[in-house]
Image (cartoon, rainbow, N blue to C red; front, top):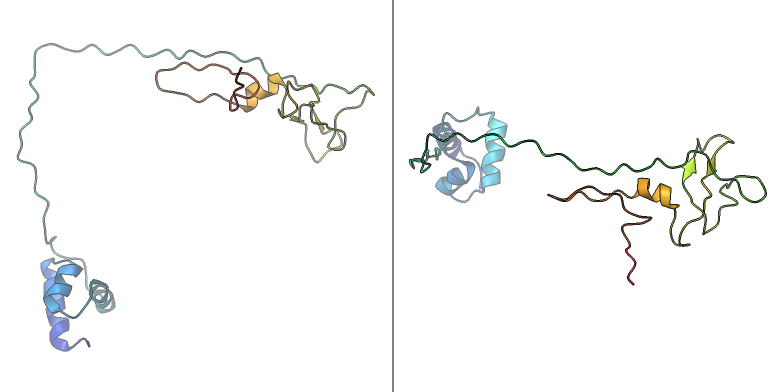
Length: 168
């Protein structure tokens, strides 16, 4: 199907009336909505004068009954927070007096990084973990694993790894 002068004229007229590309495609026949949009773009037609289906405003009236009583604003909720002790800043030296590094760290040691990795002073915490599968000591676990905040619940600090709960 080719765009004849008559079809382009009808397209321009319908577009100016505010019909959508789908409506114009149905009116012209044998043409898709995308073809209409492409032709409108190539012709450089301006925006439409009015929308084809103007939105109707709701004619319903509000059913809210107003009384003379005034509601007092609720007092703001106080968030209950548990203060977690900050993790130890200094790394714990190993038995030989040196600190844990990437070469000396073991499964049962805390892998919390301390310092800048690009310097020679970089080390790991090195404290003992409760389980060899735990990456951090108890103090660093409390910092690393934050509890989820649930609606209406209080915020509380959890143990070494709150994600995996041990069944007894």
